[in-house]
Amino acid sequence: MGLNKVGLYTDKLYLQGKKVNSAAFPNIQPENYIPPVVIIGREHCFECIKEIPVNKIEEAKKAAVLMDDIAPFDGVRFFNIQIITNEKARIHYFVIKNEVFKKFSHKAFIIVPESMLIHAYMKRKNLINTKLIVNYYERNFIAYHNVDGYKAIVSQDKATEGMNQIIKHTHVLFEDELSLDNSQYSNLLMHELFKLPPFSLKQIINTQPVIEFSSSIPYKKISLLCVAFFSIYMATTSVWLYLYEQELSNQISEQREQLNDVFSLQSSFEAESEKYNLLATNTAFSKVTSTIWLTLFGLIDSGGEILTVRYENDSFTIRVKSDKSTDVIEFLSKQADITQPTMVSPVVKSRGKEIVTLNFSLTEDEK
Image (cartoon, rainbow, N blue to C red; front, side, top):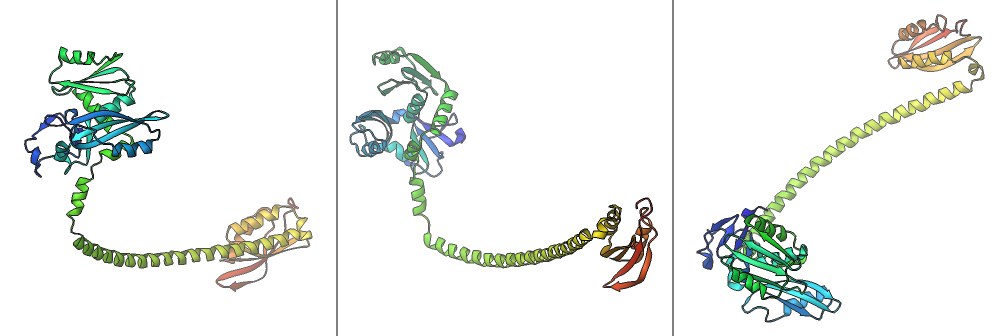
């Protein structure tokens, strides 16, 4: 989220380094721009620490909500919880004044105390006994955090020696010092905002805009519109399902045809395998050299279907089905390993194809 969506409210509302007119904030008008995320400056908040004899986070959360007299004014409370010993929990409170919170509660979806983000930063970075000095658009303050968990923020319009004296009298021995300018401090607030733990994020989400919006919704009209849209949706869906079903039926029919082709090919393969097994078990044929196999396979590759093969008196008689018997004769005539084939019987027509019976022998070299 860009800085133009995050505001910091101190003396005025700062948005991406620019002041936004806040004269109408006591009575916010719709034309006033309020960003979705507002950080409330520490000068509008009260901060304190309470320690309770509880050693479980969930019990400490319940106690933190019920505790009274947190701030010297009525406000909206935020808090962090830390278990510090086996018998004690520390609750760090951040309370925003009611009148300040109400200025933004009708528009902003996230409202968070600035002190909460500073505290989260110093805790995450483990900046123990470190002095944080910020000069943010003529707004100077110093923050520190020690092992006792207490954090004080002292501010003035301008950094003076008096500010340093106030810090000095807090009896804190600073081990380090961190100074931030406008850009660095803006980045710090943005980064810590989106690194808050889930429990803290749940607190800073403002549901009032959603509640107010929902209360203004004409539910009866919307219900009628929903019924109308639902009816249109159901009708459209029914048409789509019908068309989709037809498409699936067509696909299934195509797949069935493809399966029939597969089954047909499988049957043909099984028939050819059976023929091969018969040839392989023929004792007379098995004595012949492998040359005849090459001739038969070549004949099959060129489109012929071998019906029978008979080997007798050193010669072969084969019956072949093909589109044209002349193609079979021509193919065998070109084979150098066999003699010139001769027709044993006339060509027979069968279902658009021709069956021819031929006789040939192996050449003397192949024998």
